[in-house]
Image (cartoon, rainbow over all chains, first blue to last red; front, side):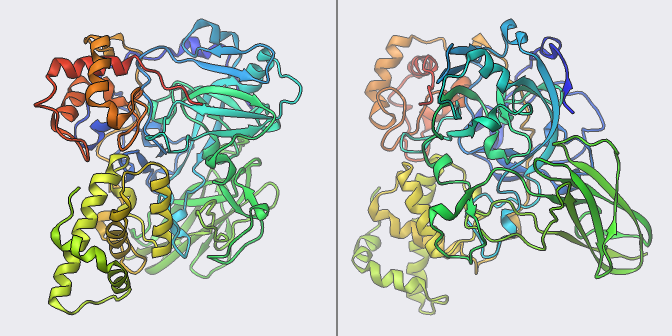
Length: 395
Length: 212
């Protein structure tokens, strides 16, 4: 259920961060560190794995996925182009197109508090998470397991904003223009749209906060679209213009990118556009966080722990397999189910000396189950093959 | 960019060189040396052109077939990458030779931990705005920068879009880039005084990116 938190925005002002420039490779982006960072159990030595420094693409080590919520500092970052400057003037986003009353949203302004603020927990996963596991190899950021995380997101419902603006007849799609500018006039902008029925779902938010704190720039603050259950390419960062239209957004990123074959096609096959489907809902998936791949363990009891999630319905069941043994049901840490969040699961294992493989597979509330491997597609989307790791047990 | 003499001569033999790429092993010492020189030239094009918009890790972690690399090169040139047609064969040779599926990753190319936190929050800070003369900055920009970066900073051939670039918030970083040059941009330290650079930065800071 959505947890309604009225006016939480007022209690969470954007903090006055003291700037200090980070040296080295990150200086390019004006990325700054926050001083006097509070010491907490979350201040573990987890370091993101860099897949590209500029624009910044970095994934979370899978060993961090044993927590119900992924700390913001450890959350993966996917950027297509450079992040925009957000410190020049108060942020504003326009609502225009097929609306009766075009309006402007000012997240830092008191007027924004007129909207009911809600907080929900949702998995954010890049459509290309696991791309590196496709064979033959496909181009793109070679994400392995960590372009995913689970966080709380606080903001206003998009449908409340659209209701206030008033939809005109013919409204069918909502376009989201980001302030993340392409580097060159010939580079297509990252323009995406949602069909109106998805845009007006209760769970679709315009968020200002992540894990209860003002959303960091690199994660799309001051204003990011939240589309729980759908892949990260829909979660537009730095929302600047919201345009209601009768048609889908034009351009590469909506019209031809983020497509997979309707039916599995062999690598290299040419699939006609009418047989391609847009990537929208996430598929069911699970990962082993502990033990880590390649770990050496002592004989005796060990917990196997990890995270599992799906798209518009929750995960229902997680099973573990040791070597070639039977699938054994794991338990969930928390019996409550966040509709769009992930669930931490665990199962105790009596480890015996030798080399072992540990596998996990999840199934969701609609009975969909993880396959051994995911049907190949040329851009490497939606990998959800069964996760297997290898460990060594010796005294 | 001026090609080394060897390459100007070899340009006539491009089809033969392209065919040679298919051979996994080159035994002839002269050919080995020429090939190394050719790949180094391709790497230079990569450094000068591709790194204008992205750092190399993204490419170093790819392992693609020649056909896939051709598609990537074509896509990036379509997106504005400053690669001249005559440079394409060298760039292609560099990419297809070093980053093919048959050439496994070096451990150093994978799983590099990030050394600094990325999760930070900027607040609106009027101190970011420049201290320079905005009008003078615009005319200096048109005179020295507009040819490559477009008359309104929106980007052009071959310069990047400069509107709302995060580097604009960092006066010292911006000064350093202008003074020392970067990638295809020459150093301007003997052309622009620091206060003139600040004028330019101040003008650029007045521009807002309006997605269309």
